[in-house]
Image (cartoon, rainbow, N blue to C red; front, side, top):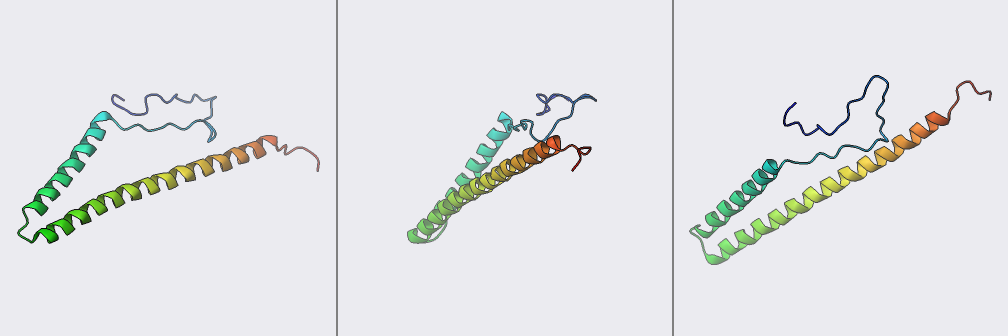
Length: 114
């Protein structure tokens, strides 16, 4: 598949089995997606700043709205980081639990006498 982001993943043959303990594939965003996200953010912030600047209101009202927008932006970045960190922590715990289960199953002999 041209342009696929998963071109670096080895295909499993009938004899191979990929397990949870294998190193997971890190999905990297393309440069175009990164550029689009940065441009979109810059455009939205610029349009909001122009709107606040051209608003027919007192300076303290425009100042309050400007500070509110900056607070909203920093809160959005913080929230995105917290969500990402929680997701990454969940993946690590899941991989550790899966590795323990695989070790237990590998050591278990169903034909061993109790």
